[in-house]
Image 1 (tube, rainbow, N blue to C red):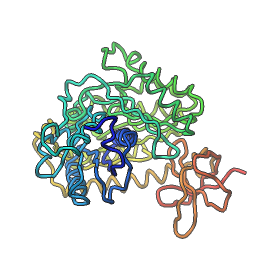
Image 2: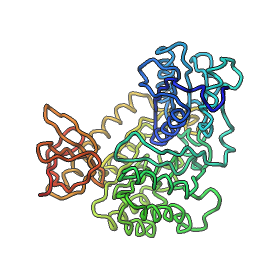
Image 3: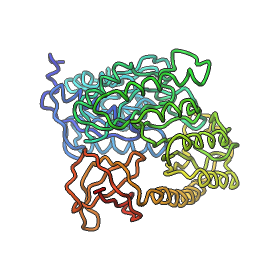
Image 4: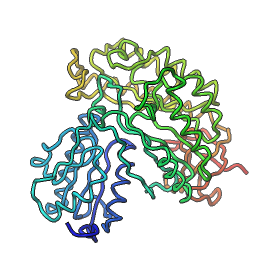
Length: 457
């Protein structure tokens, strides 16, 4: 390998991210490593010297998409170095080397080595050293991939945790991400301070199991003790000058005790938008999923949030077609979702993952049933989302504006309220720029995935 990382000087590198916001964050980190080594970024559909595909393995569809993108990279330039990183790479291992034409495999907790290993491949196409994997279940350290700049102009995602200890019966993630590992608090605050200095107004805390932040080194003796690390971090982010909004990624219902919610409500920068993973509105299904709460407990968490926050956005994930889910169990979920009045639901058709407990369960449902149930839930979700948006019609909300778009020949600038309602402001109203905040009146007029608004005079 050449000295001073000059082997990458001038090399064209393209990136593609599949899956979650954690993957997006990690791609940004890898991108910065390549650029610091002298590489030049290019579009994934263009000819490049190196293609990095940050893969996902949460479903069979994600696996297939990962394989397709790896094949596309090799097709774009057969002589390029194709790098498979992330969860699918961790799961598939060296099986990707031959049939998929992958030149380098970078597993989880090995991404900081990506430039060094890519340089070796560029210099010699020998197979030795082409598979950088660790036994992820034994990893105890958080891999630092600090980011100095992000591609989004107004909202910055900050990864604070990796891994999961929950072992829900359907989920492959603990096997490909390993156990809970938390990022050093000082590193988190330093990154957020840099982002604030660069002008970012909103940070979104993300992780594989955000609710477990800071808990891997001790056994919590009480709910209050379990809450402390994340709450302490939020209190300190609250004091970072320049940051106006703090948004939380997916949270487990069990962390949302009344004491936790009360403390959240005292932090003025916390967005009243809470993504509480549900997965099913039927207790029997939840038990088979190995989810560690009941529908009654979940309902109380939602009620608590609504006591302390004014009309908060409650969003969730729901899986349909889980093994053994009867028509009545699905109907329970449908009724429950309507009762809770979610503002948005991310709907997933159950996907078998080899090695998980659910994969070995009887009564696996046909794809046609999953599709039918997904459609029914999607109809209910659309009505719930519209009703939630309309509940703000005529009300004043603060919006962080993000980008200009054209819809049906009319120019708008779009943004999101603190509750993550997307709004469309007609450009003729007044010149508003990206990354500016303003008070607006929301209307009932639906536009695409949001509502039209006008500025408060």
